[in-house]
Length: 163
Image (cartoon, rainbow, N blue to C red; front, side, top):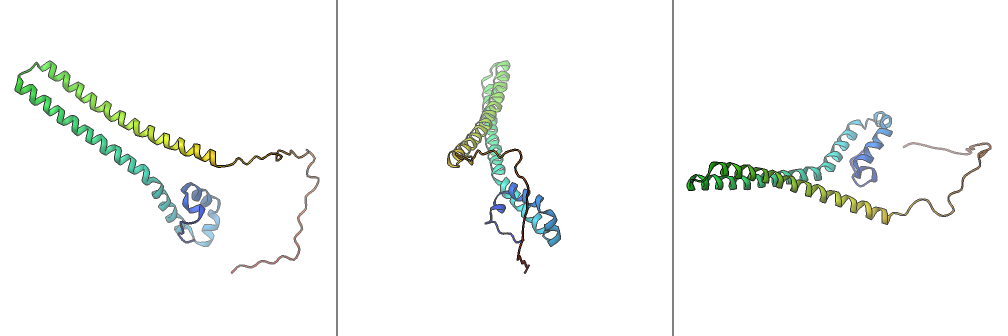
């Protein structure tokens, strides 16, 4: 079992995982276990890269927003100490500023989640429009209850070999 990522089973981690479960006895018999494990790890790693990148971008954006809020807080504190303003107003403005930063981070995170979900819905919609349904006109024949009367398989003159 070589690592060839051009086959249909190797392009999708879930498909390859299901195929591995179905053929685990064969893989053990031929000694392909380590190669299968290595291939599964590679496919899982490849499938998780977009989610990892999205999480990294969201964390970076949240960090950037928190830095902006921290700089605004420093400005508020500096102005309040230099202008000798009311401490109650300063405290209230700092609390409002911190909750504004948290709310802004939450809104950005929900926006990216919404955008990801809309992309998934778009892919599902295009899939449903492009793929023809399997049930065709005239294929709804229901066999009678007594069918089949009997079954038989005949094999004549068959030879097989393994190289």
